[in-house]
Image (cartoon, rainbow, N blue to C red; front, top):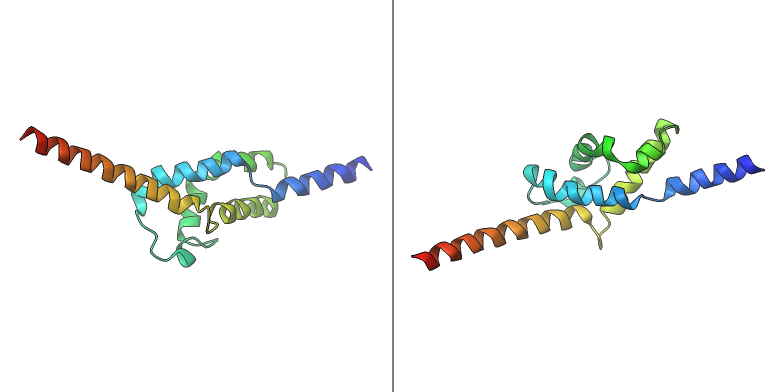
Length: 124
């Protein structure tokens, strides 16, 4: 009976996405992805699972993901499902951490550029 309970908890954890991993996705989008893609022109294609940005994310962040470390003894399929769940959660329409991260980075760069421009024009 206890082994059934343990098995149920493992399955339940597989369905949930670790909040630290969502933070990793956000940081990755702001810092690393921005160097590759400043804009996402076709979100349906670019953000799909096994799409170009998903593959880059897996390469860049796979070893850092807390959820994968917790699933270390699980099968490869379970680990793939976790990363797919994480990506699906991170790319939801209302709370898209990828586009939000890129937008935040663009905004900070534009603000810095504007401040430099204003500062230089005030000196002259």
